[in-house]
Structures are given as C-alpha cells and as structure tokens.
Image (cartoon, rainbow, N blue to C red; front, side):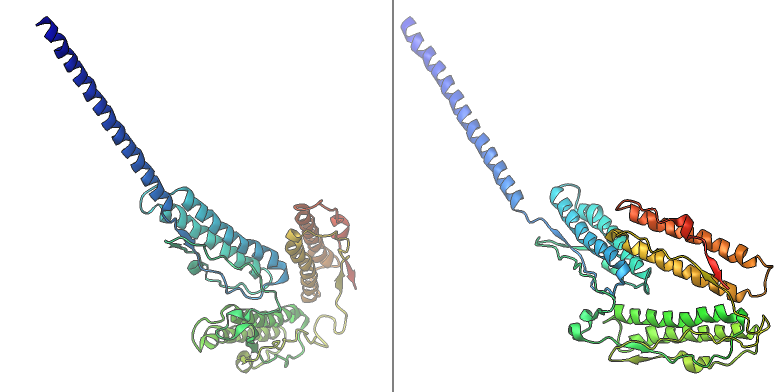
Length: 396
C-alpha cells in the first residue's frame, strides 16, 4: 500500500500542473486575440475618412482702388488660412465631443471669422470707392466634405481699378463689357451768390460721386437679379438721389437770390452706356455772381499751404493709409477755401485767421503726424516737420 500511494500522489500532482498549463495557454490565446482585435480597431480608425470644410468663394469683387488692394489681398489670403486652420482642427480632434462637435466647435467659429473678414474687405474698398455688398452673410457659412478631399481655395487675385471685373458676367467671359450710367449734365446754373457757392459746389461734386457709386454697384452685382435688376435696384435709386441733389442746389441759390428752376425732374433720370465706357462727368465749376452784396468784383482770398514733399520710401503696408491722409490735406484746403468764400463779410479783420486758418493748422498738424505714425509701424518713423508744414497763409 505504501508503494502504491506514491504514484497516486504524483498522478494528482501531474494533473494539476497540466491544468495550469492549459489555463495559461488559453489565457495567452485570449490575450493575443484581444491585442489583435485592438490592432484591428486601430487600423480601422486610421482608415476612416476625416471630413474637410467646404466654403463658398468670394468671387464678386468689384474693381478695387489701388489704396485698398494690399488690405483686400491680405484678407482674401486670411480666408484660406482660416480654412486650413479649421481642417487641422478637425483632424486633430477626431473622436472628441459628440455628434455636433464639428458644427459647434469648428464650423460655427469659422463662420464668425469669415463674416468679419469679408466685412473688412467691404470696408477697405469703401474707403476709396463705393462700399460694395459682397454678401458676407451668405458667404460666411461653410459645410463639410464628408468624404474628405481638398477644400476649395479662395482666389486671392484682386481686380484693379480700371480693369473692371467682368469675369463673372453670365456667359460674357473676361471680354464682356459692363454697362455704365449715362446721366445728363446740369449745365444751366445761373450766377451763384458767394454765400451759396460752397454748398452748390459740394452738391455738384455729389452728382459725380453718385455716378461712381452706381457704376461700382453695377460692377459688383454682375449676374444678380433678373433682367430689370439694374433699372430697379440702381438706376431708380440714382434718379431719386439726383433729384434731391439738384433740388438742394436750387434751394441753396434761392436763399440769397431768385430760386432757379434747374429742371430737376428732367435731369435726374439716367440711362445706360450698354457697351461700357466712361460716364460723362458733371462739371463742378460754379458761376459766380458778378455783383453780389459782398463787395461786387472783390477777389476772394484762398489759402496757401506748404506742400508735403519730403516723404521717404513708404512700406507697402502703409501706402493706403498715407495716400488717404495726403488726399485729406487737399480736402482740408478745399474746405478752408469754401469756408472763406461762404463767410465773406463775416467777423472782423481777424476772422479768417482765427476761424479758418487756425483750425486748418491744427488739422494739418494731426494729419501729417498720422502719416509719420503710419510709416513708423513698418519702417523708421520719419520726421516730416509737421510743425513747420501745418500753418497756411493767404493768397489775398
């Protein structure tokens, strides 16, 4: 019995070790299966297509003034940068958030950025031409290319002023001429009293501004509306504006002389130059009253301001701002001359010095300082001698 007991003990011991080995093998197989399953899941995730954003293009730009081209180009390029950033954000956040993550965290903010950028383009153009409506609301929202693929890029070519923007004309190609407005001239002005000359001059210039705005609107809305779009949306409002402007000229003259009838009804309507071409300009010379109540033929003094002709080379980023301020110096001179003409006989001997030349000096000083500051943001800030160039004298 003692000899038989030993084999029985060993048999049970060997059976226990065999079971242990079988359990280890099974566990190992299961572990490999889990690892393989995990690897399979990883491969499947890597193969999933990542969506990309699909944004409408801003392709309805009008002719862009030279002063605005750099700023417009920067913002067109920024639209592409925003698309790239959105695509990178989508790729780097795969699996994050719920089903609305992309819409709420990426497409929503992208829409806000695009809206602001397109608005900046409109504003940049509007500083030196008629401000266009580029449909920022409609062009700011983007959708998804669910199957991935490259996002459409925003073209960044800026149509220059003078070259037109006819590429979007339906079926017209780049050689299709855009129509321009053809307005009758107001050339029946009587002699204008000195007190009214500045106001009449402003309104004559406004007639030209209205023509430019109408032409810009035609260029920026090519393909919009139906056959009567230009007539209803552009020529109709232009007629109303011209009628009101000519009426204001009549009223200005009538305050100091007999109120004329300039035929506002007949001169307010404009037609179209269907083949394009330059619109006829409104002459802005104001015939002076030969014998007004302010000194008869006495010559009216004008301001004499030193020229700002010591500008250094101007960085591209500053050119638009510098140009605006140079033009502002001329505007200030015109305003001062108009003020002198419209206030003949007012105040004492120092009226012009105190009420016109003094404020003009302050305005010129501030404007020349702004030019220095604009250049100094991207180059060495120059000293243009604002103190010395600000005062003006009189051509009496």
